[in-house]
Image (cartoon, rainbow, N blue to C red; front, side, top):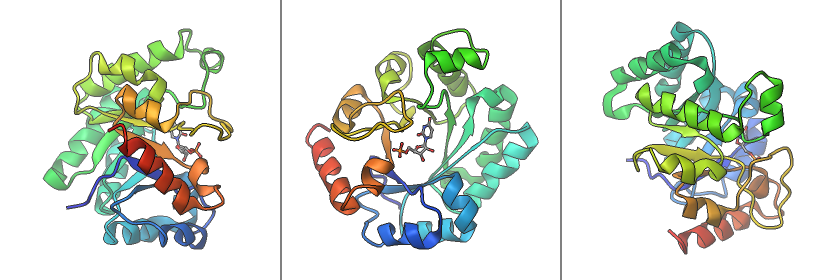
Amino acid sequence: MTVKPPIFVALDYPNAAAAEALVEQLSPTDTGLKVGKELFTAAGPDFVKGLTKRGFNVFLDLKFHDIPNTVAKAVSAAAELGVGMVNVHASGGRRMMEAARQALSHYGQQAPDLIAVTVLTSMTDDELHEVGVRKPVSEQVSRLAALTADCGLDGVVCSAQEAVMLRQYTHQDFLLVTPGIRPEGTDSGDQRRIMTPVDAIQAGVSYLVIGRPITQAADPAAALASINKEINAVR
Ligand SMILES: O=c1ccn([C@@H]2O[C@H](COP(=O)(O)O)[C@@H](O)[C@H]2O)c(=O)[nH]1
């Protein structure tokens, strides 16, 4: 059975060789790996299969958002790669999420966790208003998390800033998967709703997604080890 460490390192690299240079320094017992749009587009499904065969828990972060039939087929294709987690956008709505859930039911115990993105961690209240959602981010996250749970999905992508609020009405097993993690003193970059690893764990998140604070560190493996040490002290 695949080990499921609390961190997913976001392999946001332009090609397989660049990603591999980091992966070969990592162990599946210390971290999961997240493959997103950049690396998947460059390196493809075979690269993802290679990671799962080496025992890594892989989160395929392609954020599917399309008509129900297309998303159902896409999450099934992800399951065929052996990944442990796959996601859709909750704003695709109920029928889309239910179709994805139904498609994965064929995989039984082997099905990847199916989660839905609420509001991207790069977004602020003002940016949400600009795209026509005239409510605070926290309210929209809450609404989409409730819809996601009602559609039978396993959890959501949200900011760790929303974890305490969401834990008030979600089951402990409902996954809160949180990018926008920034250790003290690291650059927030384009992220807006951020939290430190320790604060996030204490707020009740299930998984931390961490990219640049690890991948752009002088010694990425050491940066990961240091974060693991910090969070293990409070788990
Ligand atoms: O709301 C979201 C959803 C996904 N992401 C992804 O997580 C990583 C974060 O990387 P950092 O370098 O730590 O900022 C990245 O792959 C995003 O595509 C997110 O940030 N927010």
